[in-house]
Length: 225
Image 1: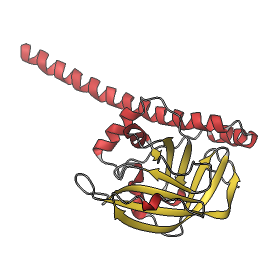
Image 2: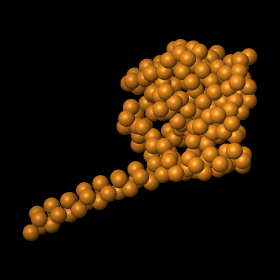
Image 3: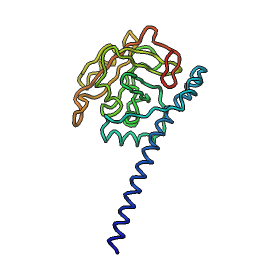
């Protein structure tokens, strides 16, 4: 009798854990979508943005975590419980990447998206905009990036188009890649090697330069005109 009660209790506990996991995953994904939508609502103060945001809001994008480490998947879900609105969105259509950009390289910001590197140009200014991301999270897809691929930065009611011009690997202490540039640029930074066990010794750098006609009207949901 006691044994049957123990088995029944264990079975019920397992069922409850599975149910809780499913609800948690759904809730955390919804929190991410709401964070991006909050950003888009701020952008919607721009009349054209408002029109496009309304059309796009019914089709939120899911995050593809198939390349992520288990640790990063867990940290991502936990980070979504922390309030915060992105400063902008980074998109690389060829890599199916859409990631919110938060102010600063805090651990929470890098878990839930990408971080705008302090001391580099503001997202809506000319210069060299530094953006950091985790190699075992959103930025792992950068392992497949190539020269001439398009990169889009959505901020302040505009979508600005860039093209990848350089890919390099530097020592982790080398910050020369973040120096100001004459040509408006984005510099993406992540640890390298991508699958290194432990603290990675190097940094993977992607430099993209803005098209002369790169600024386009907005963007909610990643549309360009």
